[in-house]
Image 1 (cartoon, rainbow, N blue to C red):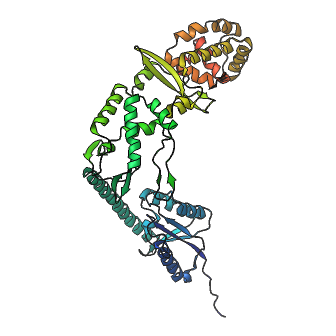
Image 2: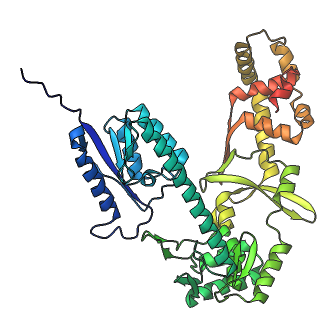
Image 3: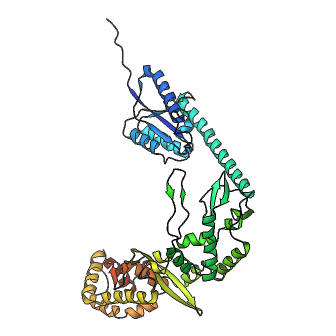
Length: 454
């Protein structure tokens, strides 16, 4: 009687390829093709074991192995989790990942879905314990090599900056780059000089922005490494501040707060530069923390401008040693006052309006009855004060509010107010009904008073 031949189980093999840079990928036969061909040949050699290459391609050209944010890898992991892959074939282990933590996460997913991992050139797979041990040793060295390379790159970068070399990054307005060297773009340089001189004359970023927008000035326009057109947008305040404080315009290179003589030509003279920095020193833009701590904004994070559909943020000015607080649309902060019809509104007036609205709603008999009923229903234990007693207590709202610290007023407002919308004609206030129980507890002098305000 003839022996029965047992057929091998078909094992579906996915070949994964990766290259860190895009260099050479436009060639007819590139490194990704070479990696895939090697993987397919290796799989064909294991055909007697039931190995078969699946047609799907998992390629990542121009992606680092230091993280898992790669489209080809994401597609591969999804197919493994869906049970469509049994073996992952790569040319070398560092093609799959260069991070030990990421690789450990991948192996865990492999194990959970009965998938294994094979390296063509290193001749091992994770189907047996020896393969796993070898893999961990090799991968530890791969990560060590990656960290050493990173240290070398950082050291080289720092040394190059000390020599005044341009080492990449956002190309500043006024310059073009060629062979890692900055050269002055005469047309853009004129724009830079104009911005410095007009700031000296106006002594105001806001007024400068109005002029720049009126005259059609734009940010630096350039083509990215991927061939996309970037920049060429309206100049905002952040762009102005960075440009007017960028030492590259006086021929310097900065690295980690250290300043070195650059190899490029300066656009701005030292005299103009010093005048601009003196104006900034006389009008500091980072003095808000002290005033903010002394005057917490009651509606911080709650108030929005309907005119330009953006949040309004607390701001202030100081005149004759007196502080004036405002809520200003973020569009105005990033651009200029003409960017929004509403503009800054006095904080004291809008705060008083909101507090008055809260008081009116609380003192309403209908609202008070509804709030009391909700508190009573929400408490597991009986509450020891009645509705009449509560009405008497609520009459002292003004005294209660004045007794609160400013920070406590802010916390209670955050509980009671959902949103405040401002437009040219009205102020709309949305209250949180569920937040009224906090004020009632405070008025009643309950045990949870301190907890409610923390």
